[in-house]
Length: 117
Image 1 (spheres, rainbow, N blue to C red):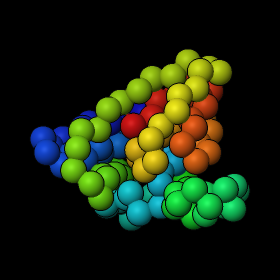
Image 2 (image 1 turned 60 degrees about the horizontal axis):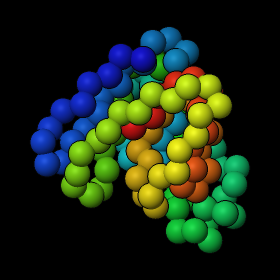
Image 3 (image 1 turned 90 degrees about the vertical axis):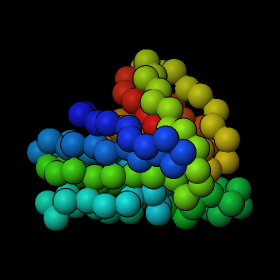
């Protein structure tokens, strides 16, 4: 997954997706995307997200094309590589996007050998 992080105070991550490559993101994190990128909501776990104040749906984007993500709040975007089975806790609203092979569930990210931002 080719990507670049740009900006200083309010950063943006631009991801170049190959044919069939997928990325997931918080609903509302997408800033722009190529016409060739398709998206669909993933609504599993919606009740827990609703009670914890997270966004209702995670969105899956499929390439080919270019897609840009940013947070509604200013700050730095940090790239994290997670080994298979590795997990991290993230603060409320801190997850931006990641490879479709990760599991994201209301502040808890479990990896199957990919990256997240």
